[in-house]
Image (cartoon, rainbow, N blue to C red; front, side, top):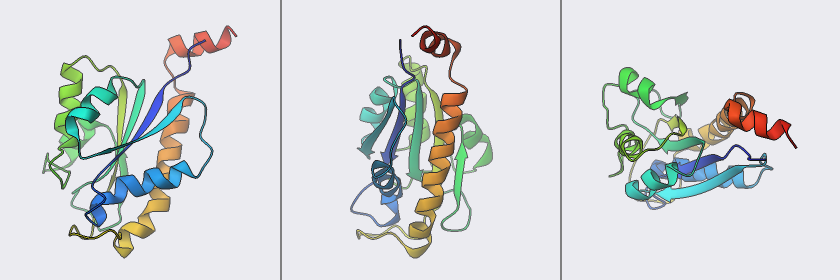
Length: 168
């Protein structure tokens, strides 16, 4: 029996205030019970590491602060394809890691994972280890959205995983 492998990636820099939003969400998720087959992975700003790590997941949820042109603290979930059509600035990330380019690289390397992005609009990106008020208030909403994304992934798992689960 093969379990669906869902990996939640927290992207960002611990040294830059709202830039650490993805990591803050991951830290909160680590305090909660997770369904079987769900892993948490902090990637920092290592784009090449993320590209290769995506290959190990059936479903990947990438959590990052993102310049989406919204109010600070706004939390949205979308596919990489939706991001390309919804946001004018293809380089949504504020750090050297361009999440959409990394996902594109992973696809070129053969990644077949279903990928969702949970973006949090930052208020400030400057040196410091505390989130802005708006982004700190958004973390629980982002956690809830990630949990809904995980539940949907499990509910809609690919047929080969559902069949294998039913054989036990």
